[in-house]
Image (cartoon, rainbow over all chains, first blue to last red; front, side):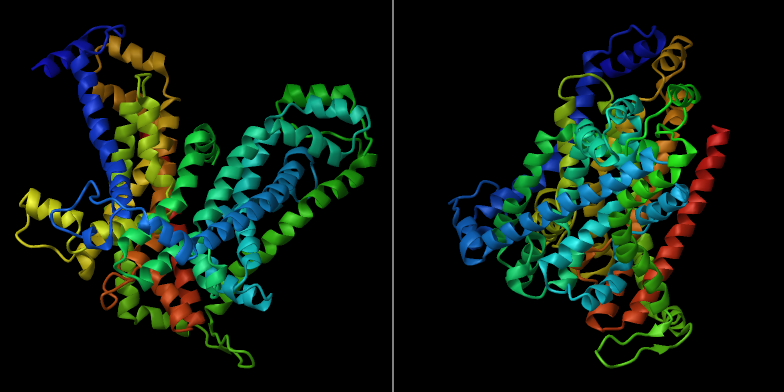
Length: 292
Length: 320
């Protein structure tokens, strides 16, 4: 009843009408149920990672692990070489991010600040990369990687991850560079600074927020990438985390505690990065949405 | 690079509101072009080699019986791979399954994403927390959440327990992942769960651009919630809605990891989608040419579909 009157009132009265508590109560109820659905699977995963094998698929399910054990974590980290895959993923993601940001910021600088012949055409060609989903190219890329001797190596991962990230990062950074007042650069130019030093010492430091956004998306993209790693990596010691976890599951199809302990180890850094740098996520998404 | 700029150029640029590039005198133009090309060269060369070349290569391969073994030659076979696809029942099933996945996942993601965004579009406390919670699945790797959902939809998993023992909606445990439609349902459930946060985020950003004064004056004029949404909010967020729809449809046809890890296209190819089938043809059966032709068909199909959608959205925008 209160709900109906609240709705009727807010409809009739002017814009200054305050929402009745009942409506905001309903809003919170819906949001709480919704976010519970979002979070519950993660909590259940956490709970399972702390169970021994006997308790992972019982009916009724065990929500609070009893007895709780961290054995899955120790086993995953040491016996199952997860520490090694963690380092592999980290190395691949760091190298990919560094290289991609350097190359795409240079391209973005050229597109944003120079009027050279063919600029529009080259930019359109670059945007093609945004339209073609990565999976469409996986077969010819595999043939190419084989030809270049990049199969089964982490270099093969880095090179192709960089290639795949160039379009989006250049697009994102170009937009930001264009918004930097050109007068600053002109002042530097009058003082005799060349293009490289204007790019390196002025534009890049001013573009930190955009670089942060690009860093996060590139890093997470390569941290989470699965299909390409599955395709080119054969040697177990070259596996990255997603590949290791997926194959883990294949070998031990029922060892859910172990699989989820490994999964938690893989997603905790991602969640930490997300929580710390939330606003860059939003910026990255909206620059894609609003301008794209 | 010691070129200086005339202030007039600067002012002209600012006045025209044109692109904020540095203007230069004609005598220095060629040197500046050189600088620009040097900045572009490393990245663009890599892009051409790793993205554009494979695009062309995929197209070429689709006309060959491609042989990847050293020493063996590939044979040009014209449209044979495409003809094979048209007569391959598994290809058609994979196409239908991809389409079904798209239909199962896209509308719920749009509706729920917009709904949650609307609920969060105010300054009420807890807004940031809810936003984070809804976005959590988006940032989590596909591999992890696919395994998680495989576990939840296991025969004696949480979903069956909830349906059977708690809600008593089913009288036996469903083997979700060993049937076509139940399998696609489980995979779609994952798709929706993982994707709602993304469309929510885009819609939240778009809702910031809805003119508040217009909403308020509509309210003063006695327009109800739905009327205000229809007349003010919807036109303002229409471009974002178009973007979300097009991206989700593309994403729907690109479903791969969740299917690969939850059912691997099985049992007996019943949950195969286009990309898992393409992958299996190429990397299990070493039928690279056939795999490439599936990739080309999918790319062209999705491209046409996007073009149609954009046109529909544009004509609808004129009517709004």
